[in-house]
Structure formats: C-alpha cells, structure tokens
Image 1 (cartoon, helix red, strand yellow):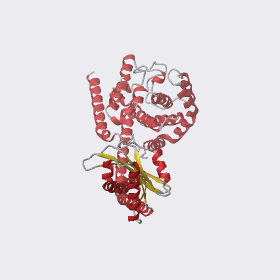
Image 2 (cartoon, helix red, strand yellow; image 1 turned 180 degrees about the vertical axis):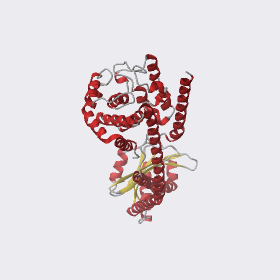
Image 3 (spheres, one colour; image 1 turned 120 degrees about the horizontal axis):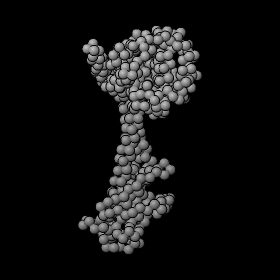
Amino acid sequence: MNGQVGKTMAARAERRRLSLLFRTSSDRHSDVATMRLPTAGTVLRRLVGAALFLALAVGGIAFLVEVEIADGRVMELAREESAAFLAEARSSLSAGAADIDLEASLRGFMSSRGEMRPNHGDGRFIVAELYAPDQRKTAEYVAPGAEWAEKRLSSSRHGFPGNDDAIYDRFTLDGHIFIQTMEPLLDSDGRLLGYFESVFQLSSRRSNEILRDTVTVVGVSSLSVLGTSLILLPIFGAYNRGILRLSRGLLDANIGMLTALGSAIAKRDSDTNAHNYRVTVLAIRLAEALGLEDAAIRQLVKGAFLHDVGKIAIPDSILLKPGKLDAEEFAVMKTHVVHGLDIVGSSDWLTDAADVVGGHHEKFDGSGYPRGLKGDAIPIAARIFAVADVFDALTSRRPYKEPMSFAATMEILAEGAGKHFDPVVLARFTGIAAGLHDRLTRLGDDGVRDELRGLVMRYFKLA
C-alpha cells in the first residue's frame, strides 16, 4: 500500500515538474508556433511598400502646403486690392454715393489698376462687385471676355462674411486657377461700409511656377523619404533575418519539447513512441481530407501529441495491467483526462490542445467521459482524433495485446458509427484508411517519424 502511495506521489511530482518545464520554456514565446512570421522577402516588400506610401503621403502634404501658400499669396493680392479701392472710395462710401457713381468709381479703379500693372506677373482681376451694407449690389466691373465669371458668381452665390471675416474660394477651369474672394469694407472706426467681391485669375506664368514648385517639393520630399528608407532597408533586413533565425529556433524548441513530452508518455504506455507518431499522422491526414483549416490542424497536432499526457499521473499497476481493469481501476484510469487538462492548461502555448486532451474519450452518442458530450458538442478535433486513436490502438501491438487485422478493425469502427464515432468523420476516414494503413506499415517506426516531422514543419512553418 505504501509502495502504491509512493508511486502515485512520484507520478504527481513528475507531472508538476513537466508542467513547470513547459510553463518556463514555452510561455515566454507562446505565439511563435501559433503565428506565421514573415520571411525576409515579405518584410522587404512591406518595407518598400511602407516607404512608397510614406513618400506619397509626404509628397501629398507638401502639395497641400504649396497650394495653401499659393492661395495665401493670391488672397493677399485680393486684400491689397480691396484696401486700395477702399482708400480711394472711402469718402464716397461713407457719404452714401449713388450706385451709378460707385460703379463709375469701381470701373475707373479697376481700369487704372490694369494700366498701372499691365504685365503684372501674378495675374489680374476679371470681375469686381461692390455691395452695400444691406448686401445689395451697387456696382460691378467685368473684364472683357470674363462674362462667364460674372455668371458663375451669380450661380454660386455664397453668404456674406462677418465684419471681421472674409470668404475665399479657389477653383480651376480650363487649366487656369481662379480665386474668388468676398471682403468686408470697413472705415477707420470699424464701421461696415459694404462688401468687395472679386475673381482673380492667376497668370499662366504664376500657375506654372506654382506647379513647378509643387512638383519640386513633392519630388524632393518623396525621394528623400524613399532614399532614407532604401538606406535603412539592409539594416532592417539583417535585423529581420536575425529575428527569423531566433523564431525558427524557438519554434523548433517548442515542437521538440511537444514531441518529447508526448513520446515520454507514449513509451510509458506501450514501450514505444510510435503510437504517438502514427496517430498524429492519421489525424492530420483525416483533417486534411475533411478540409480543416491550417490553424485547426495545428491545434489537432498539439492535442494528438499530448492526448494521453495525463497518464503520467496514473499508477503503473493500472496503466500497464495486462488484463481488464475493474471498476475501481477504470475510475482511476479515467482521471488521466483531468490530469491532462491540468497540464496543458498550465501553458499558454498548449491551451489549444485541450479540445483533444479533454474530448478524445467522449462518444458521439453521449456515453463517453469525462463530460458526456454528445454529437457536435464534441470539438471536431476530438471527433477526428477519436477515430484515428481507436484505429491505431486496434491495429497496433501493445504489451497487453496483439494487433488486429485491418479488416477486423474497420468492422469494429463501422459498428461504432453514430455511437462512438461521428458518422461523417468515420465515413471520410473509411475512404482513406486502407491507403494510410498500408503506407504507415511500409514506412515502419523510423519512416513514420520522418513523415510526421515533414507534416509538422508544414503546418508550423514560418511563412
């Protein structure tokens, strides 16, 4: 009795040790094997794309800044013109001159401005309108050929500004840039005398200068960002290659630990770890046949390796008993599921193995353990693994039994359809079982191990 207690305590201690081992070795890097890390080429393409995007973004900002500068220059011209007109017409506006006199004054002013600056490089005012404080139009000037601009003002009339505000609107037509302004006219005491509205046409020379300056600034900004990015690319590339090497090493270490722990438990049960290799290959191939996604198959692989990890807590007298277990012994044996869930639950990287570890003894009709799940309530990974596990258990040699033939095994599986096994999953397995069994038999233990290694690398590879 004391020897039995000692074995149980030793088993529990070993389980805690392995649990802590996984907690320290894999939790720090739990995302390594569940994420697909980018290759150096992928990172290079992303960096180039980011550099181009940043260059375009900087160029776009530079373009907007240049346009704002150009707008500011033209708007300043409009302010200068309204100020000049106000200086000449302040007395008339203050005295409430007749509309005809104001229009003559406006026409004379605009004509004189054209004569004084016939070759002004920035452009010219093609429309000017004067409004009384009550927003009634009192005077208008339209340059020859610019009647279209006056019609545009009439069709797109906007509100009048406050006493201290101004309204500006830039638009482009036939490749020419125009600025529409509405300025309040105030006397020296801040009293509103009216409003001055105008349309200024930017000269072709000035438009070309703005375009040239904008293209230059955008080009220089974009090329600077792109050049800097190209200089940094080799540095980032070297850094990324180092990260990938470390990640590859961590992934290999995690998978190696997964394999080692699963194999240790399998050897304790059957003196060989070949069962773990075969059942994992069978489960993967069945999952592929059912069309499971890669992420689900990675979870299945972890669960397949560790499905019986809880048996570390089962005494050898029960685990290795050659005959049938009695009711009390079977109750102890069933606790390996709970122990297994405790172990995988202690590691973030192994948590997704819980579907198989906790559900591979559930049965489709609800008669399984530990929770008595039924039908689709059993995780698909557990339903897949249940078929693969029973098939391999029946066709494999164990210390307490000889292997069964393929035909006899398939008859037993067929009898369990809808009871032990999901009939859809079993039907799919039936279609591929003969080929899989023949291949695994020909490969032998070493060949199956190599086959499994290739499959694991495929699903846990760094993308």
